[in-house]
Amino acid sequence: MENIIVINNLYKSYGEVKAVQNLSFRVKKGELFAFLGLNGAGKSTTISIMCGQLKKDKGSVEINGMNIDEHPAQIKRELGVVFQNSVLDKPLSVEQNLKTRAALYGIEGEAFDARLKELCDTFDLWDILKRPIGKLSGGQKRRVDVARALIHKPSILILDEPTTGLDPQTRKAVWGIIEKLRKTQNMTVFLTTHYMEEAADADYVVILDAGQIAAEGTPLELKNEFTGDYITLYGAEESEVQKLGKPYEKTADGYRVEVENTQEATSFILQYPELFEDYEIVKGKMDDVFLAATGKSLGGENA
Amino acid sequence: MKENSMYEMKACGALIKRNVHMFFKDKGTFFTSLITPIILLVLYATFLYNVYEDSFASAFPPGTPIDEELLSGLVGGLLLASLLAVSGVTVPFCANLFMVQDKVTGARNDFSITPMKPHSIAISYYFATVINGLIVCFVALGAGLIYLACIGWYLSLADVGLLFLDVVLLVLFGTALSSVICYPLQSQGAMSAVGTIVSAGYGFICGAYMPLSQFSVGLRNILGFLPGTYATSLIKTHALQGVCEEFTAQGYPVDAVKEIKDVADCNLYFFENAVPTWVSYTVLIGSIVLLIGVFVLMNVLSARTKTKNEK
Image (cartoon, rainbow over all chains, first blue to last red; front, side, top):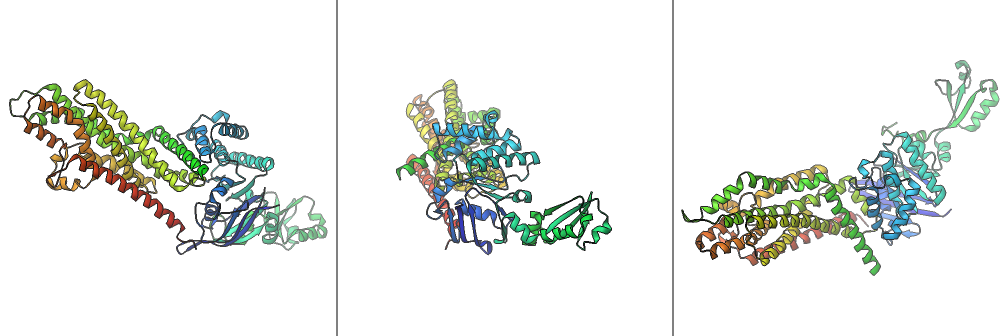
């Protein structure tokens, strides 16, 4: 797959504060790319540079084959951004908001009408089209936010913590829409999130810490590198679990044993088949990867 | 190149339309912008009307019979002029606060990720504020003219034309001044503070609540440095010119008419020197140009600040 975003040796400082230091990464076309980091890690700075809102100190940013220094306006047409909080005008209706934003990309008249119809069909906006944004529920607002981000048919959708503060049902609905877009339109999605389970579904993950890359890879690669596997044994006696000689914890229905990797789990199964009548083996979580890679939990505390 | 300019113009137009829409849809901001004119109307309805009627009547020698319609036309003209003088500044100020509100809500970020150039966004705020100010002031002027027609009409067509010109210039001035003041504001608190101070204070310093002639000499001299003073004086001059001429035509003492003009600030003095009308226009237009220049400079410097670390 070809790279749609190529960032090389990016630097940005605010006075003495080094927001981004020597940052380099690639995003492939059609990929779900997760950009993780605590507040102040440099995520927003990187996105602002990509969107042309902030000038970099050094380095290069290429989007869809265009250098941001040479083609800032064209690059802006390639990007659609869903901000953490809805930035649409609350007193205006959904249609008025979309019409204004479309005009800022030069989409007017019949072209707008056609695009509006597509978006209303995709995001089920017909019933709320005439309603003011301020009167919509959180989930409805989010649907309109995504529709606004896609009004000009960008090739990359940037989601800046899009599900923060949303209830689980709405989060699920938002992800349903994003998945649909990826499948039907091969859209590249650049995601920043605090929800590690969302990052676990990404094709590639970059973990940022203090403006630098702390770890990167596919979720599987990261889990293999930074965490072990976990065996959950159901219906086993504690004395039998102790035989494994590995750290464990009691759960509601059994015991959760931490092992080095899948090979070690396999060897235990072969060695103690009587213990493994009812069990499951899972990889470590992305939270564990984040903690291992940065030494910080997503709550912001040092480990 | 031509296509780009066309795009910028259309995008600018769309943003102007949005900003105008927002002002009239946001009832809170809209009514806040009308607080000062409403206060003025209440003051006139409760006591200022009578105070001015008595004050103007006392300018004539005791026992002089005064035409009631002329007197009503005079006080009504002063009310209209005062109303326009405050609205021309406070309405643009409140309308321009959307520039700050958009920073607070993040809408400004949403505009800056579009291909629109930053200066086009700044221009759209300026023109939207001008349009909002003009709509409100022209409605006020229209209503005021109807009111004058009911109580005593003495304006010539030229006076009406000049009143429209004065309102346009005052709105341009109010917009330029508010653009400069609102541009650096970043928070809701700062926005509220500026809105409150302007709404509460401008009626006094422009001489709408009380003519400057009633202030102490020192304060009058200080207020002479404010360009808004000249705009107020121009509006008062053109709103009262017809009725003052009618007083003279009907044989009322010239000195008394001059005193009325002095009391109503139609005759403006800067350190005891009479200020001719053309000087008032020069000061007003000059300050508009200067303030727009400062606003442009602020935008340029802001863009440079963002890029100063670029190597």
